[in-house]
Amino acid sequence: MFKVTRIVSCAIAMIVLTAAATHAQRPAAAIAPPLPGMSGMWLVQDPGSGSWAAWFNNVPKPAVRPEIARDNEETEKREAAGNVVNTMARRPDCPVGNLPMMMASSPPLNIVVARDEVLIAAESGRGRFIYTDGRQHPDTKAPSYVPSGFGHSIGRWEGDTLVVDTIGFPARVCDSRRPVMLVPGGGRAKDTSHLVERFRLADPETLSVTFTWEDPTVYVKPHTYGYTYKRIPEGLPIENNEQAPAPAANQTGAK
Amino acid sequence: MRCALAVLLAVCTVTLAAQRPAESAQRPDFSGYWELRLDSFRVPRAALTPQSTAAAESQAKKDAEALSRCALIGMPAVMDDRSALDVRHAPTVIGMVAKSPSSARYIYIDGRSHPAADELEPTTNGHSIGRWDGDTLVVDTVGFNDRGVTRIPGGGHRTPASHLVERYRLHEDGQRLSVVFTWEDPSVFQRPHSYEFRYYKVSEISEPRVINCVPNAERTRFLSGVPQ
Image (cartoon, rainbow over all chains, first blue to last red):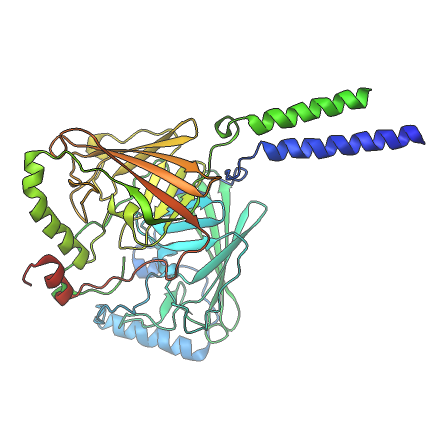
């Protein structure tokens, strides 16, 4: 009996000391274990639809509420009639960014997957901040919350998949043509919308992202579609480094 | 007896592991929100060339106009943002995002070199690559343009010929980040110009994360003195 107790005590001591040794090897601020290699520049794969509008809507059609379907038809008519210029002035309270547009657009995504936070932006711009430190969403209905077109995103890892949950989009944006942000296929992204994305490397050079939108004021059922992105090795992000236009020539949008 | 020897061996392992420098195990991670405080700046006067001294006033006016027009500020102004700098450190790249109008800054730490000059489109932040010197990250940047806010702390300004070397090192158990900047540019400095910024780690960053800057005619006139 004494021998068994001694063996167990020795084993416990070894386990504790081994754990301590492992901990001691880790600096106070060290890079987390190797993350899936999503960091880098990624180019969305256009299946050859020919035009931006055709590409943007080249996803499964969502089941939308009747008023959204009517609004889509009216928007199409206005744009077919040549109403394609945004005439709204750029104001300080205009929301910055547009998540569904950025994730679907040809400027490559620049992704940095770090401990506690993931950065995603187009080219050298600034874009999304995805918090992976365990925090929750803020109260996006509170007056103090300033909505951006990127919403508020929190993420978690499910194995090798980054699952990102986003809410807090603006109710309206500064665009006379489409005052509510569009979602590919004919949906909307607004203050009542909820997006879940799943980022996963299909292989080291191929990133797959699926998007699922829910919003009872827009969709009859969740709207899901996906994009594939290819890695651009050692890509050089382009900077839109034209000096901002003179105040007399204000434009919509933000850096 | 055997158990005692095994425990002794484990104790030695713990001791050696604790004494091992960070660089031989894992590199420091600079991720975090880093802010500058009143005591952050160790900036001597730069030894400027006569042509740079003569250009100081017009350069200041150009910077003010860039600010008033919400142009991308670029280096080194992004490192001197009045809000905390968001630094995100991945195994192959470090991303930095400032609140003021600016491009995100990327420091490639995957062993790549600078692109050939004819492949490199100059930007306000330049092209940055990093290598480790022990627990210090040494960042080499070239490929600047002359747009945005070009003022360099201590005197002088960024030009397309500028070359910047930065040395990043953590102190105080990772709560303070020292960055020593050294600029070289024969048209601006008589000799390399070095200064240090000390950043302090903060747990939160203010929202919104970026400024929606809108050019304003009155602001432009006030800051630049340039009639519109």
